[in-house]
Image (cartoon, rainbow, N blue to C red; front, side, top):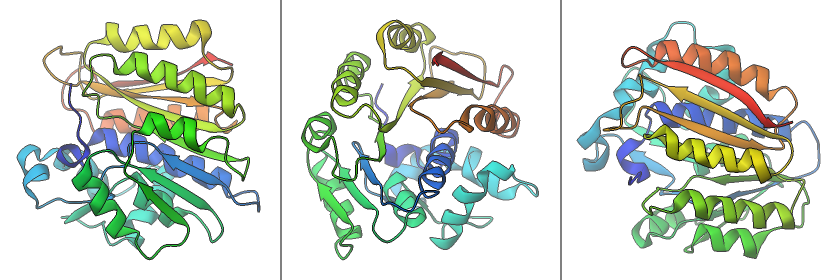
Length: 278
């Protein structure tokens, strides 16, 4: 499947992914020393929800717009929603939605360092323009898996890698496994967030089975379904988190259960959070 970010900005998958990203960054900030964040498939950084791509799908109406309309959002959403508010991307009818680079940068501190990678030339140009005056950010027009080899381990020795591919290639899960194996061999102590779509559960399930057999230790899996599995469309998505904060499993289990209720688009909406390797 092709999952180019602009067409899906602010949908249920973004809410799921970005709320977890915000929680991990908040955990990183508990220590004074700076951290490094590498986003391997960064997109444009900001999507106009009135633009052609977002309007073509309108997925944000059943994602972030539902959350903003909720009178009592889940407490674990607080850092994520606070970042959206500071960026001017919150309200009953949001006009834009930030990608993971802008959310991460908004949540971080002076001294933290960022490398954002995007292979699509137009998206990379937009990302470079967005951060052109930010000395803490470097933007690279390059393959994200190449970045894993080129940029790890970082000089900070602590930090986070977000791997969020568009899944245009049929062998993306295989490439993910290879890239993660190489990255964790270079930097075993980093935290890794890997996002994946769920359309055919046998495909994503094989990916999880491979990680359970031979992946890194301390690997958590979280999945959110908005409907029963439908092979014709994406019914859910997941995150694999390597070296998660120790409280994250329980927090995500409660949060994603809440999101499954609020963001459901049919019978069968649910969440599961489990250790693949503890």
